[in-house]
Image 1 (cartoon, rainbow, N blue to C red):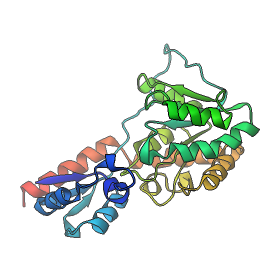
Image 2: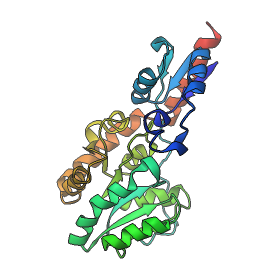
Image 3: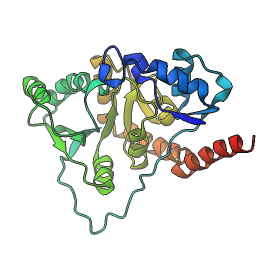
Length: 261
């Protein structure tokens, strides 16, 4: 039996957010014990497994996920109507995604810089609670929602952003970081998570639970074209290390190892 393990979100944040699967740890422990090999999608997830479960470390094989988002030919594609300058947030915004803290960090920047916008792509339209928070912050004219129709949409969103911010409290891997870097978009991400493995020196890091730390990281990037250029180049250098083909090959090797044992 091969078990692929993505994250320990429910173990670390299950009491805070029961919807993540609080109470499933006993079942996970049984599966980990039964598995002959455990594929972990990152070193961070491996550390989490060892922290929360009783498992033989030698059974764990780290196979990082890979980027499949290639920049398609945009010739003939409809050009999106987007602000000239914007910070990008991608995906779901609830629970551990930490959007409320991120918005609190962005609001004073937006209030000071009226030409700057925040674009939230995908994850569903703003909830009533999110609309209330945005309105109370006084930035309703600068915070925009944009649906993701396809990969071409996503590529344009990344390519034209000054910065992609991923403020999640935890992610097992964090594919959007790879996606952003593959499109030449600088990234600001949570420190001490799997993001460190992906972005390394290509990213700017912050403490996810500190709006001041997030604000400082954002301002550091968006007001320095020199730093943005350096981050783009470093990001391009990181992306080839995480190819989807490599993930497939390494996963196949894990199964071959077990079959031939």
